[in-house]
Image 1 (cartoon, helix red, strand yellow):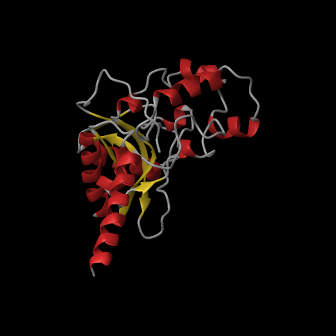
Image 2 (cartoon, rainbow, N blue to C red):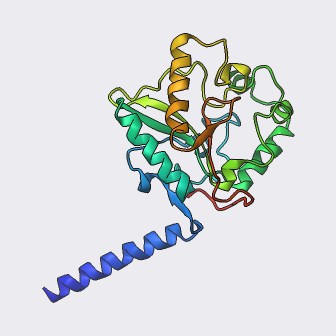
Length: 228
């Protein structure tokens, strides 16, 4: 029995040390969304090649999502309200390292190499014009831990609600109040905005998926820890 207790203690200690090491890179004041709200659907496009660059973005080493504590807790309240409607939040991006923003800037300087990806995400613009048009920021509120990109999905089917354009589709079609979307798509966008704004988030009007928490916990601080 004594040996068994010692063995159990060692195993528990190992997991505590492992968890502490894994979180050591995350500043105090930030939390993992999957820990605060386990029912969230964590997709994290930039940790995959499923994004407008066609590459895994610098600083994204795992499909994990972090936010500052206050917006994370508010997001969990939104999830509770979404569940009452048979829906769930699906996270495309949350905290974004500064090195990822630098990665986007370096990507914009390179010649176009993938017409298929351009047609999918930014058919009307060059890479540099995405910055000029305000679709990609040189300094991002994501790096302050207060912004999140997301959509709504049906819990039962797992299907995304039809929002009229894909995440990171850089075009005025993606403006939250675009007159080019159907009534159903407009209702879905407005439902997402209503749920988010009720808990302290403000929508970026050019992108139906982008919301920033107010007031920001770190309005003047940009973070660069890796997502891992």
